Image (cartoon, rainbow, N blue to C red):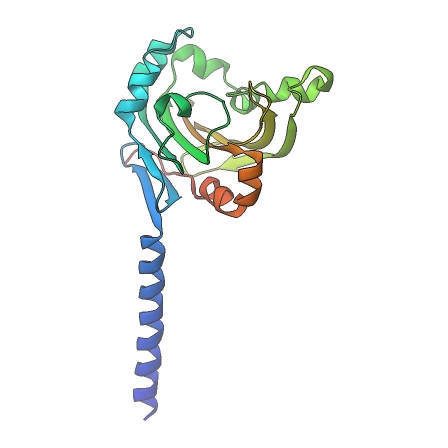
Length: 219
């Protein structure tokens, strides 16, 4: 009898485990690039913006070295809660409708590799360090929420969460993780952005996306 009970209990546990894994997988979109070993999990139902659309939008940039940087992109992809968000909105810092997630993996040239630092990683999108050192001249709605070292199997860097005002004065929250490969040849970027009101309402869901960012490196 004990043997039967044991097998029944074990079977029940296994069934629960399988059900849990299945339920979890069905509730997530797994964005991944197997070449660079980069992964993250997005809630199911978000709209995907593919690399070709992002490349096309980025190719129109007039910023210095924009074409060179685009040519060195290994993978980029975006997701948005709103179907109205397109590639151009992903690539600027205007507060989006709903939330936007953008992931990018890019090789660095020799000059970038030699000059990059933790402050460079932290200031990739906005001059966070400068604003902290000179609060009087900072973005009018700048608030640093969190800033800490993030270590992955194949890279390490900084995760910084902060608020700022976009060009329209709307408060936006940015959760950015920027990691540098161990050999300093590649940068891995994850940005999660939303209007602060939206971010605060969905904070657990959005933080979980940043937590899921994983860099295992080339196979």
